Length: 435
Image (cartoon, rainbow, N blue to C red; front, side, top):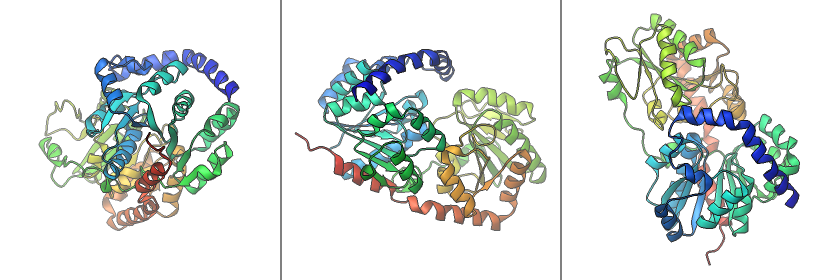
């Protein structure tokens, strides 16, 4: 254990030095890089320190960005209902995740930036917070944070855990460092049966692995707020009342142009159509706007809406945390990061909203779900621009096929129903007794 900690703490600073230029570029692009920067070094204002001390003991939930924050919020809402006396810290890494957490948090939750995983910063944060439980969402295994939490008597859980084939190979490569850390986890709640074997293979005790399903794929309507009605906004832009609306969700570079050209071809067949584009990184929104304009569309930004209502046929969503609301008013969805990028994004929210989905061939981060959806006829893969155009057009024209996609996808997701409750019950069982 000691040597693995030493090796990790020698390696991490070197890795950060190598990655520093890229990290600085990302911080500058995404903005607000100076906001509460001290919290990344476990340096907190007097007001925050006072609250952290006064409201002990805490349950600390860490979620890296927007998708993980939504999972964390869903779990926190369940745990609040079960025990209203609980207080939660929700930490996040990205500015977009922080903004969403601040906006959606309840009265019992304090939002902070997660400290950089240096030994001193992690120890300082844990010593101040003194959590009774540390809950890490999906793949956020931070060794120093875990070591410090265990030292101060907290239980540590990894929830909604998933392990892609690529991540599994990475963990196995670093298994001499990773295995002692994974052995410190009190429980690992996994999404699918295949994840059980993968987590066992990289070093987690089999008795500590629990199949709960995915909180992300759990029915959001069961524990989250109902979606906002955003149709009046579209009508105010001049979008026809009966327009058929396509949405590209969490798109990456290059996919917007492909989707834009496919949309224009579809519009020649069905004139009353409208396109929504939600880039995965909102700081790309103005670049996406230019790309779509160069393709021949008349796009506008959600934040400015400086448009000519008679001409606008595309809305670029540069807002944070609204995608779930937009799903409720569209007719077909393309899942991004799957056509020109590697890994894929989560199709669950679109399916939960009852929408037919298509995605590209690169869904590695959600391979189990994607394969299951395809095997039961709950989704369709688009390998290129022509197939994307054809599949989206068929979704708009062939109601019987679309109904079949929706029905089969909903059935596929049913095994995840109740995942939030199952996870919460396991977490309560391993909570240490209060002094």
